[in-house]
Figure 1 (tube, helix red, strand yellow):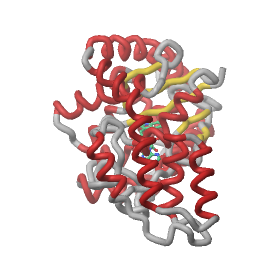
Figure 2: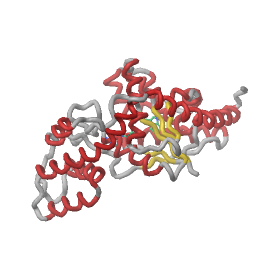
Figure 3: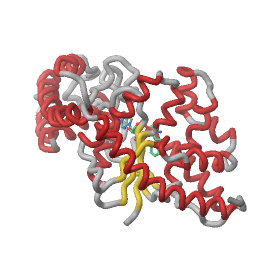
Figure 4: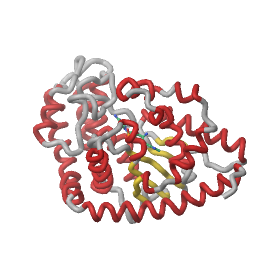
Length: 323
Ligand code: TYM
C-alpha cells in the first residue's frame, strides 16, 4: 500500500476550509493508502500559544479528525511531538536547504509580520519536509496554501538523495477543487481563523453560522455571465455540505437569470447546519473523554515511531553518522 501523510496545526478551532481542503480528503483516501494523520503541535509553537491553548487545541484536532470520519483503526492518528524523530530529521534536513529558499516562502513573509521573525517560523518548512519524508510518504493531501512548502520539501529530499543515495521518497501533493476556500468576509483572502467573520467554524453555533453566511460578501450580480469569485466560493462550499445536485440547481437558476443571493444563502445556512450537526454531536461526546483521545494518540504515536525510527536510522547510516 502506498503511504499518505498529512498534518494539521493545533491553533484554535478548525473550520470548513480545513475540512474541505484537507480532512474530507483524509476521510475519502484513508482506506486506499497506509494513512498517517498527525497533530502538528511543534509547528504550532511558532505562534507561541499559551500552555492551555496548545493542549486544548491538540485535543480539539484529535477529536475533530475522528468526528469528521477518520477511522483510527485503519489510519494512524498521532501527535507530532510524541515522535521525536521529526525534529531529529529536521536538523539533518536543515543542512540541505538554503536561507534563500526559506526566504521565498510566502507564509513566512505573512506570518513573520504577525508573530515576529522567530527562527522556528523561518525553518518551519524544513520540519514539514521531515514530517513527510520520515514515513516515505508518496502523497500528501493538503490545501493550496501548503503547495509551496511541499515543493520545497521535494527540493530538500532531492538534495539529500543526491548526497546520500536514494534514501527518501519525493512526496506529491493531492489537491481537490476546494483546495482554496476563500474568506466569507473578503473573498480575495483564504478562509482562516484569524480573520473576523471569515470562517465557518466546525463548532460554530447556529446563530454564528447564520450571521456569517448572511453577511458573506457577494460582490456582483448573481446572474452575470461568469460567476464571481465570491459566488464560486459559496458554490464550492454548498457542493460539500449539500452535494453536487444542489449546485446544479443553483447554476441552472443563474443561467435563467433567476438566482437570488438571499435564497442561495438560506439554502447554504440550512445545509451547513444539517451537515455540521452530526459532526458536532460526535465531537462533543469525544471531547468529554480526553483519556480515550490520549490513548488513541499514544497508540498511533507508537506505530508511527516504529516506522520513523527505521527510516531515520537508514538516513543516518547513509550520511555516515555513527550511532
Ligand atoms: P494548517 O494547520 O494551517 O491547515 C490544515 C490543512 O487545512 C488546509 N487549509 C485549507 N484548505 C482549503 N481552504 C482553506 N481556506 C484552508 N485553510 C487551511 C491546509 O492547506 C492544510 O492542508 N503546515 C501545515 C501543517 C503541516 C503539514 C505537515 C501538512 C505540518 N506538517 C506535513 C502536510 C504535511 C499547516 O499549517 O496546515
